[in-house]
Image 1 (cartoon, rainbow, N blue to C red):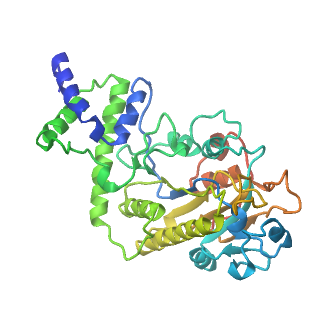
Image 2 (cartoon, rainbow, N blue to C red):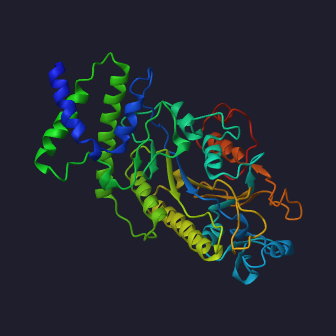
Image 3 (cartoon, rainbow, N blue to C red):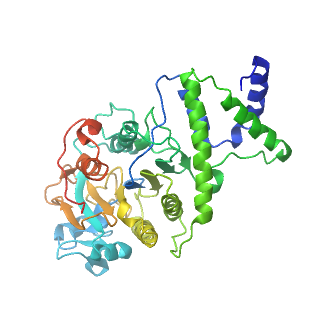
Length: 413
C-alpha cells in the first residue's frame, strides 16, 4: 500500500494525536530514523542474564560484614553490625541479618560473593560512576553500554524480545544504536494505548498507525527500521500479554519495586519470549544519614526478591538457564560519618545468584588497615566479572566487547 502526500499528512495527524499514548519504545526510535545500516538484533541463546542494579551506592561493609575484624568496629562505632546480628559465613565475615534469603541460597550453593570489586581512579559522582559501570569504560570515552555492544554484535530473530529493561527508561548498559530495547514498567502498559478522552476514535488511530508503517518504502533504510521495529514491538507486546495470561505461580514476590520488576521478568522468561538480557533497578542506597534502618530494609528487599525469583524459575524449570548479577555504582567510605550514615566510597561486594553459580567467596576482601584516603582499595576489577559472564555464560568475545583482557573468575559451575 502506498499513500499520497495528502493521505500521509492525514495519517500523521491521527498518529500524532496518539503520541502521548504510545509506548516509549516508538518515541525513542524516532531520532534513529536518519541512521543508515541499522537493523534489529535479537538473541539466539537460551541462556539469560538478569542484572539487578542497587542504585545509589551500597554500603558493602555492612552487607558482607567483616565481624571478625576489630578495625571494622573502630571505624563503625554507631553503624557497625554487631556480631550477634550477623549471619556468619565463616569466622571472619558474615551477611547482614536482613539477608536471610541469601543465607539459604548460600547453603544451597546458588550464591557467590565477589569481594573488593571496583576499578582504578574511581569516581564519587553517581552519574559518572554509573556511566563507568554501564559502559565498562573508566575513561568515559565510550558512549554505548557493555551489554548494548554485546547485543549489537549477535544475530537474532527480529520477532523475539531478546532484551528487556524494566522501568521508565532503558538502562544505559543496554544502549547501542543497532539495538532497540523495550523499557517496560508493567505488562499492561506495554501496548498501543487508546485515547482515554476520546475512546471512539481509538480504532481509527490504531488503523492509521498501521497504515503509516505499512506504507514505508522498502528502499528507505530508516523506514525499514521503523517498520521493522514497530512490527517487532507489536509482536512482543502481544507475546507479553499472552505470557501474562498463561503465567501462574505459587511464589509470593515482595510488594516493592524490585519484587514487581523481577516478577515481570519471570513472566517473560517463563513465556519463552527469547529473552537473553534483562535489567531491573532498586533505588535508595545513598545512605548518608540514619543508614541502618534504611539499609536493613533494602537488603531484605534485595535478598527476598532474588530468592523468590529463583524459586519461581525453579518451579517452572527455567532456573538452569538464568544467571543473576547485582551491582552498585560504588561502595561507601570505610568510616561512618557524623549523621549515623556513610558517604560515597569505592570498592564493594557483588552478588551472583542462580543455579548456574558455583557458590562461594571470590576476590579478596579489602584490608581495613590499608585504606586509600579513607577508602577501600579495590582488589577485583569489575570488568573481570563482566568478562567472565561474557565468555563463560554468553559465549561472547569479552576482549572485543570490553576493549581489553581481564582475569576470569571461577564463579560459574
